[in-house]
Image (cartoon, rainbow, N blue to C red; front, side, top):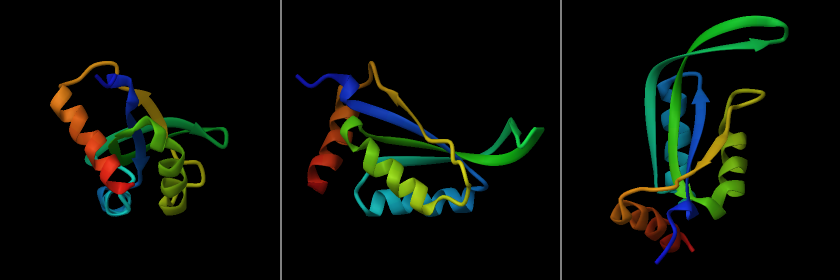
Length: 111
């Protein structure tokens, strides 16, 4: 039985839903990930170049196998408009086994 922690969720903020969908399609079309949710309408508050800033953004919620992380990061960095994009991977500790298997199948078919 496969362990759930071979699956990861990657979070990546983008300037808007349009750029998010472009990156999402790139990742899925290149078979790097199983699925990407583009979540519009978030607000990010952060310090940049010494100033506190708040921006409207969209959030990508990316589902993939853990072994694909480096290729996914490289692809996001090549497509992302930000100088320093947020790319954070979180291991999945539990989940519906059939959905987790579907993520694995998407990865296996890409090989």
